[in-house]
Image: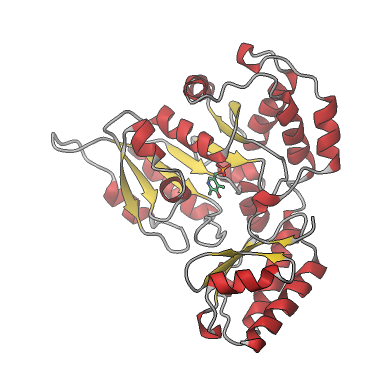
Length: 345
Ligand SMILES: *Cc1c(COP(=O)(O)O)cnc(C)c1O
């Protein structure tokens, strides 16, 4: 990579081992259920999450949308955190595709208070829609990669079970959450009925996500995936990289978290930049640069001259995401560049 690219962990290119596995992948027509590599990835994913079954999908968005479609009926209401990915970045899909209305709850660091969830669940009344799903997001993207603790998930799960409502977990970065909590990923997945996670972010696969759940859930979800054009043919080419992602890339994420911490601490020591360290838990750093006199757009454009790419996240906020291709040395270069730019200001 020519640039030090901190815009997202989605910019990660497939590793050489992934390319080799893709080249050699045994494939078949997956719509006929005949792609052995896809089957292997799905079995592996179900096992890792502690679920009965799993399904390869083209993207995290497709995985979330298919999951909501599978859990709900038109006219239902679903509970989500206000700034979650499903509401913010999925093109209004849940309204368009699932025909559900949303009841949003404002979380702290993306974490909803179980009491608020309990209060949001609809009773039976002729005027009310049915609450048919609760969605959680762990780690929480817009909150800055923050982790929902297991105790919170457990409490929400118990409330959901008492009301016979399923939980969908948007676990795009669930391995980052597991790394932070220092638990097996199953310990997180057990508090959700369906879990979506991404292979193509910090795990470096080029394409694809996974939805896991019960056999019955996945069987139904496969039809919705087909409806959305997600019935792929020799998808084993992609699944082969996903297998390497699960085998090799899930256990090294603490390096990314360490680099994010280093970056955050360094940024905090630059005059005019503020990072709330309590939110720096995984691989995302949200910084407030308002006191530097620069906007996010200005800083990111100046950083380009140093060969560094970042994302403005609001007028005076910049987001940095660490990943496999960001080394400790890169963090030092980035801090040096930002220091220089801010001093020139
Ligand atoms: C990236 C992301 C998704 C969507 O994944 P895509 O593959 O980009 O569609 C969903 N949820 C969260 C929390 C994400 O960060």
